[in-house]
Image (tube, rainbow, N blue to C red; front, side, top):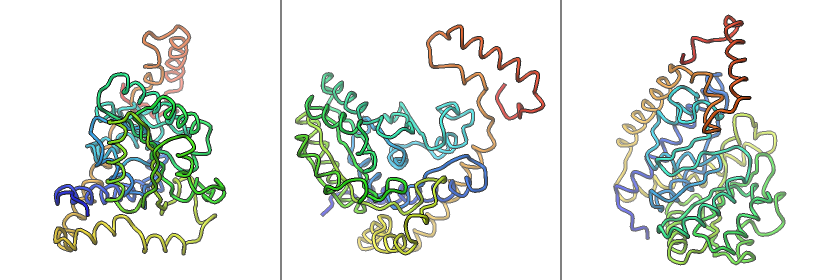
Length: 352
């Protein structure tokens, strides 16, 4: 039995459903041409919220690109999500990352980068630093089963095992690496089977059961911080949405398959059944929350869309402490170009 309080479980449900609403609204925004790209989390809400709830707020998170729920749990606001997706002047990344590449130093969430697997060896290194500091914290690194085919995955797991680093490698096995089904990704029994070969504590868990994810992650964290050892956790789930707005999953899987998983094993539906059975939720609360939730998401999106884009000079800043001469020259050339062809650019949309 789960020993979580009513307050915590209700928060889990609200964060999962808010993530769901944000995904739906932002997916539609991309289709309307209002943002350039988006990736939904449909079907994988339980893996994110269950694991985030089991961590210390100071544990360091290395996400892949489908971990928005962990940030939402930690307090990343809807405005911050929207500012990043619209790439406006309030975006913490100053508009230099593609949408859904979130990051927050204040919430111990390392900025997401698009290349697969790059976060994995970085997570091992960060965990080794935590071990040396003896700070009582751990690192969690999310990745998909497709990413486990990258060489970086082997390097990260091997380094973490041999150096005994406090890191949780959290594999979201959602059935597909974009269009490649898991049966074509590997011939062994998933990703969990590799853990013992590295000498790593390993567990496979139902990724659509938020309580199972919570308990497994909590146990994994205890091992990390008490024994300074890595843990490999494989969460078996299913990606209900397209891989991204650049993907059409009907080209490689049937609608019936998606409908089967949606009706049979939705993590949100399963959690709601639990809440109702405990008397903590009902249709009246659902109606009020749904209306409030969608209103908040839509308002945050509208606010972000109206804000100006960052000043174009931000393109040249932050990489070096002191800007080198060649970048100064390039910035000057661009300034001259924009002045000469100002009529061809939407200069009024950018901060001066």
